[in-house]
Image (cartoon, rainbow, N blue to C red; front, side):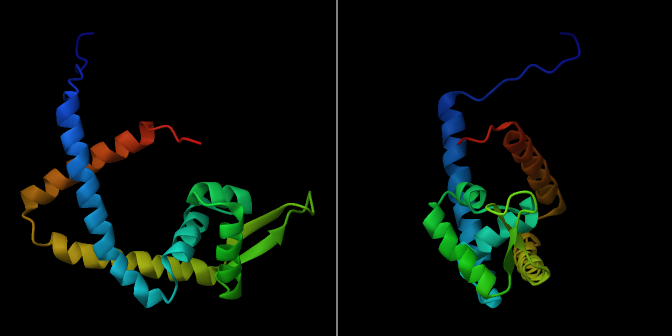
Length: 156
């Protein structure tokens, strides 16, 4: 295996310690940027479901419930709220009238993209405290996390 890098995974305690710190940091970052969502006027459950629809495309209520890890009756209430706010719509499948797809409306897409922009700007203002070298290091770490996520199988 000439020319191929040998993987040297950290020992279990090292990986566990890093996972613990990453988990804590991720929760704190998300809690802080989530405060920007208040400007949308929508609650976290609706925004999360809307995000799945905007970035994942139309899907059935069941698929959306699985993606959001909630029971279908809970997702039905969330979708009803999104529909009533004109952020999502229910569309009957042209091939099977019993099958309904949930899709974000242009208003829903706009609301979500504006919220994402607010969160990113808010986080960016705080990352401006880092040096260029620190930002480069963070960029490398993010690329590593993205690779882990690509290789991480989705569980059902």
